[in-house]
Amino acid sequence: MSGTGGTSTTQSEPWTILRLLQWTTEHLKKTGSPSPRLDAEVLLAEARGCQRIDLYAAFNEEPPESVKAIFRDSIKRRAAGEPVAYIVGKKEFFSLPFHVTSACLIPRGETEHVVIECLDRLKKYHRVEGAVAERSAVRVVDVCTGSGCIAITIAKESAKFNANVAVTAIDLSPDALAIAAENVRRLEVSEVVSLAEGDLLASVPDRSVDFIVSNPPYVSEAELLQLDRGVRDYEPKMALVSGPTGLEIVERLILQSADKLFPGGWLIFELSPMIAERSLELLQKDTRWRHTGLVNDLAGKKRVAIAQRAS
Ligand SMILES: C[S@@+](CC[C@H](N)C(=O)[O-])C[C@H]1O[C@@H](n2cnc3c(N)ncnc32)[C@H](O)[C@@H]1O
Image 1: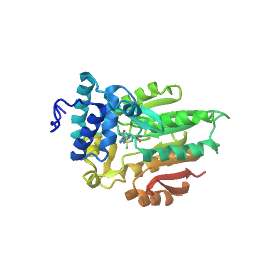
Image 2: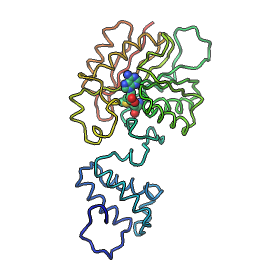
Image 3: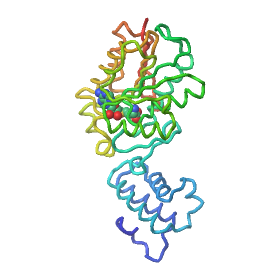
Image 4: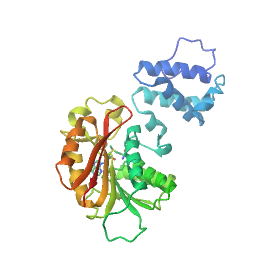
């Protein structure tokens, strides 16, 4: 394809959608993409302004030059290692479309477990203590919110079972918060989700929260070097790296959460299998926590820690 390295195929053969996909799949395979066909389809659908499925009904069509130009540009970016989500500016999470840029982490499927564990408990939650009127909102804090995917999904999903929730989404990065604000607007949850800039839970009053959910940075400096090029070179380091051990932010999160939660409230956060047992130990050695546990992701890896604030 002209402008992307060329092919040996003759000039006269038209660049149909099928041919574009075949050529691009081979090209992205050579440049190291683990999902070259999927990438090619997503990028071509985006350039054409259609759904991926629509490409299959149009294999023999030749897109106009304007579409091919957008497609060529996005293939160059993908071949250089940029994640598809940043190129198209969106990523699906819990079947919701989230706007993303390189200012925020790309939402991952594993993080959906944090949402699921929170919703399961929200459905049957009754505040144990706290001078709060009956039927007042259940207060949820999503700390390290990034794109806002956890906070916004909890707001959307809990509305389906008529839970009255008030969600605060916190991040230290103003640029990430700007993306979260855009998602709050686009996904129409501004009455339920408010945003705050801050260092972990510093701005949250003691004994004022029912649920603390988080996907905090939990990668160690050494682990960062082992991550895929697309993650290492494009996603914000501040979203990934916690410090030399990977446990630094989780340790602070656990300590602060014990002060911020109402008795009976829940802390639910994502972690890596590398720090899972050490995180569990931190929770278990502190008598302010009960019902502590770890939840596996779909790949069978320890992915979420859960603990309830004791009375
Ligand atoms: C792993 S990302 C998670 C983003 C999003 N919740 C998700 O699951 O896709 C971690 C986020 O924590 C933020 N962050 C890092 N250190 C922080 C801190 N000390 N206090 C608050 N947020 C922090 C980063 O800016 C980043 O947006």
